[in-house]
Image (cartoon, rainbow, N blue to C red; front, side, top):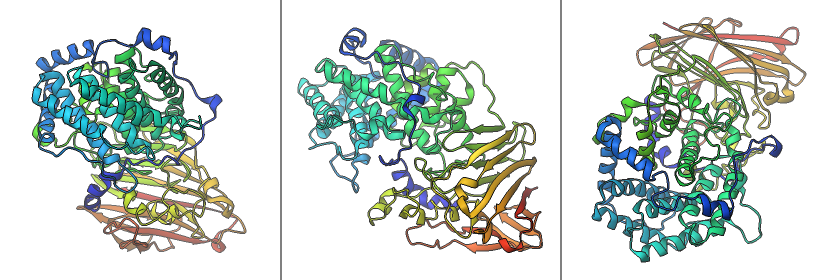
Amino acid sequence: MNFFISLMCVFALTVTFAHAGMNSSSGEEDIPKLDNPMSVQYLKKNLRKSQPRLVLNAQTERNLRNKLKTDPVVQNMYKAIQLNAAEIQNEPLLERIKTGRRLLSVSREMLYRMNMLGMVYGIDKDPKVLQRINDEVVAVCNFSDWNPSHYLDVAEMAMAVAIALDWTAGKLPRSTIELAKTALIEKGIKPSWPENGRNPGWAYGTNNWNQVCNGGMIAAAIAIAEEDPELAAKTIHRALDGLPHSLVEYGPDGVYPEGSTYWSYGTSFSVTTAAMLESAFGTDFGHFEYPAFKESAVFRVLMNTPSGWYYNFADCGDRRSAQGDITLAWFGAKTGNASFFEKERFLMPAEEMGKLSRLAGAALVWLAQYEEKGAEKIPTAWKGEGANPIVVFTGDENDQHNYYFGGKGGRGMVNHGNMDGGSFIFELNGVRWSIDPGNQSYNELEITGFDLWGRCQNCERWTLLTKNNYGHSTITINDSLHRTEGLVTLTDFKAGNNPEATFDMSATLGDLVAGASRKFVKDSPTSILIEDDIKINDKTKVIKWHMLTIADVEIVDGGAILKQDGQTLKLENISHPELMVSVVSLYPAPLELDRQIEGLKRLEIRIPAWTVEGGKTNIKVRLSGE
């Protein structure tokens, strides 16, 4: 699996750069609402008067201080935060330096710094830390603006400054407090209210921009509520009204359509927003109970595979951090489910954790709130439907083979989606045999003028191997692109010891076939069966079954033998043993702008339509290990 490592550092810098234009549509009438009593009167009556009140308040701080005396996880994580805070004080102050069209890396660094420094000051009351917070706040509040053309930048910066003000609870110089509140109003909130009176696209969008931007505006609004209660109330009201448009995307079962990395990004801001609202108003206004939101914690757990990588569909990173999952821990604190609380990872030596998540300071509060109430088992056969349906088959707790299979439907039009309907990954014995090529740096593509975000059928996005069907383990007809609007749906699912799932691929293959379905069956503890039923028509010329792998491949009669990391996998062409498996090298990849993955290759089984009898064919391939 070493092929991913060389690209991870580049990818880590850019993976969460969402694009405001990538929205899907949800009918207004179908969207459950959050509670939204927000008005100036409600704000004045119910907003906690004392600081801190953003995630931290008198009650949560008291609990945190008690846990710092007794809880090894809280003690260890606070030690890591202290180490991070010490490192920050050796760094230069931030400057307004953009990367391409984004200031986001600066805003994120500020949010990180305020989480680390703010939490340490809140606990230790060190005047040197307070002075550094002051210097950081003055620096960013004197920026000419926070880059409102890319509103994620504004949102994360606004949350950072709001936390700095709140967690220092009036101890910053009066001049700094006034400067910061003015910046929050003029550079944070007011640009979110366009002069034309229309709401910005993110306010009611369906992707992570909604969660991040509305969360940042809520933090800013609470911070300036006494100065401008009308602006604060209408901003929070709009956020509570708009947030369901992103939360509904988790439905019906918890799948985050943009993949696991974006689950972490969008959901981390949702849980922080919920925690801020709860600490400031005494209620999260329905976040935790929102349909399928809490179920998304199971999705997140299941996206972590035995090899240590993600099931990296959509614009997702390859490998998870060694650190504990602070966002998942919020669900652990709410439910008491030990499956959501990665205790061992939180207890890794603080010195080895390195740079923490930029929201780790806030997360310390809910880490301290966690009380184990049992560990509900994560299912070994799971389905999640919605805009990007997913199935996962795993081994049980006694599995000696580290079995993992993930298959999916969906379509290219989904937020951060690819032409990967019908694709799958497969791991066995710690080896990923069928891979997803993952994501690549947005900025490196954008600076060339590449149109990464258009999703029309002939848009440039689909020339990339990471985005089109040629770079995924699926079915292709006539060497044509999948139909970007064609949704691959999950039509059947059976759990049990030999789970199976069937996807209807007709829509994404379009009029090139009369119909198509793909079934996945875990037919033994060490194998997966992939079965395709294809009905051809006059337009069908050639059917191509393909699988992406970085394994070494030996072609044999009836299939192939794959070897990787000392392990062996057999590919058995059950239905068409007379057809030779072909190997197409994808390293180097077809385009210079493609992600270059060492050893990448596509295994193909080509079936000319003229050989198909009776207007339909069944393709059956089995992957089996030892």
